[in-house]
Image 1 (tube, chains in turn orange, red):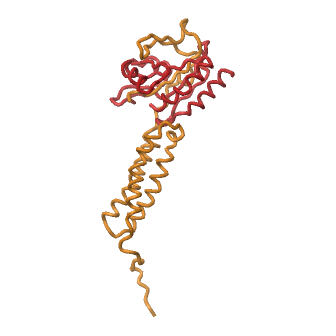
Image 2 (cartoon, each protein chain N blue to C red):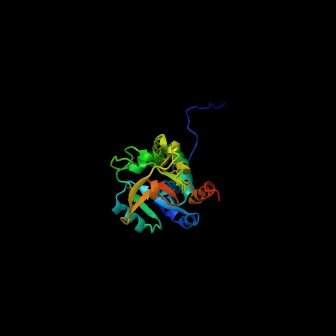
Image 3 (spheres, rainbow over the protein chains, first blue to last red):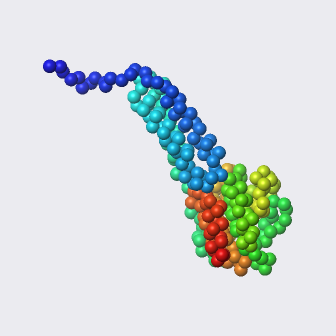
Length: 144
Length: 113
């Protein structure tokens, strides 16, 4: 009768092929630049789905190496993938939150008037007696 | 400035609805001149360096700029010819931007077309 050794590790290849690891690393590195490149698409911009899809698959592959490979450097390189994914997720879902606007953003019924300069040095007035026609105001962050 | 480029594409449609598109930020006029040229924007950019309009509309992001200056929370206000606010939208996240086509539809609906 053979004794079962509970401490025996399951049989596994000492070194598995590395190309999936390199592929995962490439995916992780390319995910964020890809998001920037696709910013013109509002759907991509709002959800970041191509970035999270690629980085997510890369993180899964990386995790397998980090968990089960024998070589320390392979475990480190593998583990870097889910780490990068975590950093991207924190930035995307948490750090990106904007402050709640002041009350008048929701309550103003009559558009506050203002006079500002446009990019060509012309004065543009909105509201008051100078107003004519409808206008769509886009407030943007700027400083790019 | 993906957002501003996107709105350039619906500028003509907005004009047909009698709506003038105006983009406002705290950038100085020189910076806006650069932005308008670089992205070939068909509408005007207004420089609100002192933040007057941004405060009046209640969309101040305190210390949101790169150097901690006050900037605008990305937002939209449709002003009717009578000066009333007919439609508005304020972003909750930095990457939260509507599709310009969706905005065009909302504007069209708010104007009763």
